[in-house]
Image 1: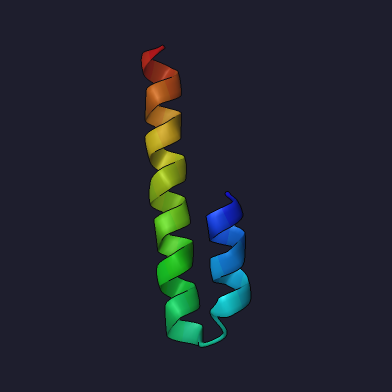
Image 2 (image 1 turned 90 degrees about the horizontal axis):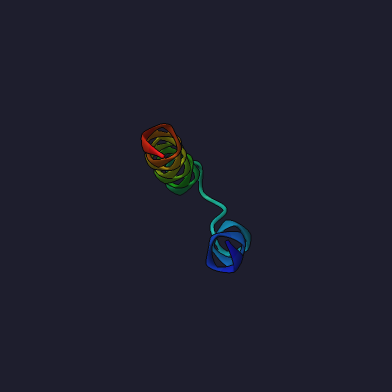
Length: 38
């Protein structure tokens, strides 16, 4: 999470923000799937 926060501070352009949001959503989906499995 610390790395993600540093990325948010470094990134300021809209397209890179969209990519960052997409990565976060994908990670959230993975965690939710793992949670459902367990």
